[in-house]
Amino acid sequence: MSHIVIPIPPLPGKQEIEVEVTINNQKQQLHYRVELFYWDECSNPMGHRADCISEMLSHHDPEWMVYYIGAPTDKFVPITFVSKESRKLLQKVKA
Image 1 (cartoon, rainbow, N blue to C red):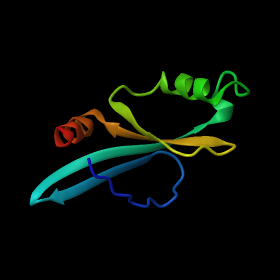
Image 2: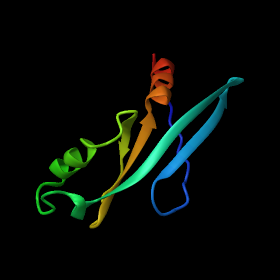
Image 3: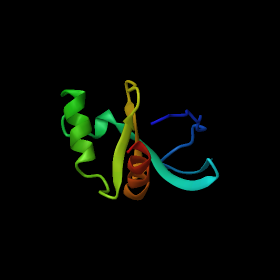
């Protein structure tokens, strides 16, 4: 599967992103969400960060699937989700 990178302006809170692409005259809409997960929201903020991410994601909306985990900072980790509907569309393209 090919990838492109689209810069997203830094805005506070959740970012709901809808992308409409036309590839070979076929239009498709993809839905993404970017959220910042703050380390101090973990039950054990001094623990291993992978455990912290796993804990935070265990309470997440099941209609959205993890698509990409961004570079962490000292305060948070940005995580990009894709809607299940869009994920199915991306998997069809991959096949």
